[in-house]
Image (cartoon, rainbow over all chains, first blue to last red; front, side, top):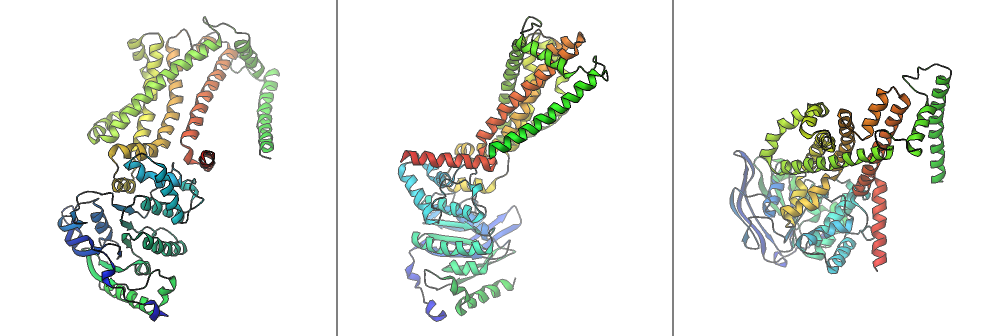
Length: 263
Length: 278
């Protein structure tokens, strides 16, 4: 079964480079090197997992791409433009859902549209569709506090979809959830991202999760934060949770562990 | 079932209240109390009846006149207080230098008993309504200031990042996140302010006044009319309860997301609104 699940995905199945980093370095203050000499090249439609222990610079890398912080040196472009500030074609999701407690689920999803322009009926329809896509049909008028942690993250995902951003940055979005919820959301995220054909950078410290979702895994090591290895993951999509027990999957897990183990 | 429970608990509370009053009344009637110190409940009730329903005139006005004069002075002082307090808080929230320089004054101001400046206030503003309003303003602006400031400065890094990534301006962040996020604290400040404004108004009336429940209390006490004094006290309590209840109801309405009931109510309402639009 493992043999059939594994099928080489040709690199050419992805589009052209959308995120290009060369020798990207970020030093906080004078001395804290959060990220050192990172080289990476991410193509349209790719799902990239960044995995590594705390302090390996994975969140820093994400925030550099988002334009939330400025690099110290190196070159970083998104769609061939140098990153200087946040841009609306890049959306982000955080460990906390960051929902506005005084807004219903649908009002939270509409927030990005509202920031850009007056809300139209089109926006509302789109928000309903986004909530439907993340499996929250019927919960449109619930407030965040009436929803479970997993459902709150679903709302956050719907809000990210609503932005229409074709680059999605996710900073440990399921890190605070229990194992069962996390697994279900991983399966759904894989499906949703596949449907949207968005380019995704997904930060996590969970090796299984990183491999299950990714086309490529960037393994990062701390002090100073570095990209230690880039590993291809060539399972067919859509993926089934059962691949996690396959031999090929576990070979990749071992490879990630070995890379991290030296540090 | 729900109303039944409410009726039962209401009866229980009323019963315990009546028992306390009954014991007090009985003890006084058997001569256990010096009525120059503590008048019996029936006498206080009598006095209240005379004041509210027989329109007894004290110092050129009925109790209603004194009541509304106090309420008006308090309300004006309260409005000035929350405008000053909230304006200072917003400036302090956005300007770190201002915040740093105002901090020591705020501490000193907070530990100085505000009502102690009454003689100064009278010297500046005279014996009219101005001095009542001024003292109410002075004693009530601090809670809104410190609460609103705390609310606006609540740390929320991820929300800031979220708003940046969806391309929000600073003012959009303020109106859609920072201000609503601070509303629970802002309302806590208002509730504190409304009761301190009442305190300030009444104390200022003690200093000098021709109207207000403070002056009622003082006149009755000077005449050793204890039933009258206690009736004034009850009136003040009613006034305090009234303004506090208004603040509480507004708080529940506006900051509805704090408790489950509020969330359910608004959630249902929004759902109904959608289905009626269709």
